Length: 262
Image (cartoon, rainbow, N blue to C red; front, side, top):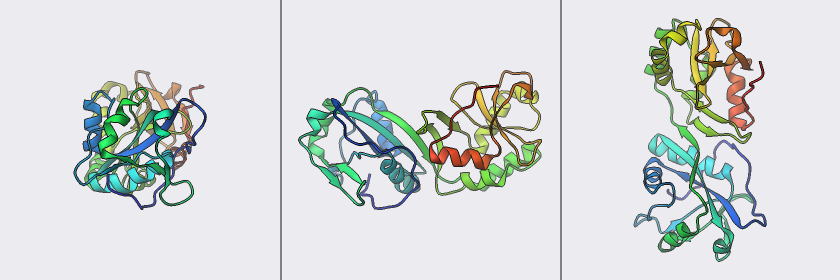
């Protein structure tokens, strides 16, 4: 990760140091680094490269998010926000550095001391959120053709912006997974019989299980509904947002929660 001096959308709560035995930190992470973390069993950060003398975990999720969205996504097409818990007694040896504004706070861990940091991690490193770069036009062209109607313009604008929320936990505690148009069509093919029971459906996301966030394209604007993909029709669908713009706003603000009451 290069040094960071770039703005971005805020999502998530700030983390302040409390009196517990651990300190929760976050780190913006690219694909290559995340793959190495995964290879460690989510238990260690990989050694720094020769041009990376310092490891920079940060004290605020929003700060890690802005770096992931404004640096990692343009550089690699994807960016992650990861979370780590570290023994307070270990971190007490380091100063907290203010790298910009009042709340732009980070630790500076020398590369040669990273193995020691790994030895003082508490629990696993967590992938909290994934962001992706713009979806290409062809995906929307293919989706519109398959659906027989266009996806909402607001959805296209969001997925073709500089970065969009792909999956992860939002501040409310909800785990949300969003689909690109190509992924949506793959799901439609996989669940052909189930989608056939829901005419004019567009599966735009879900909760990581069989509950799907969908658009009902029979209406304009299309409402966002929660559908059990094994259900027999629209009757049991639960409204989540009046339209996709409302869904996007809530996800970006971190306030979205699944409504499971029928």
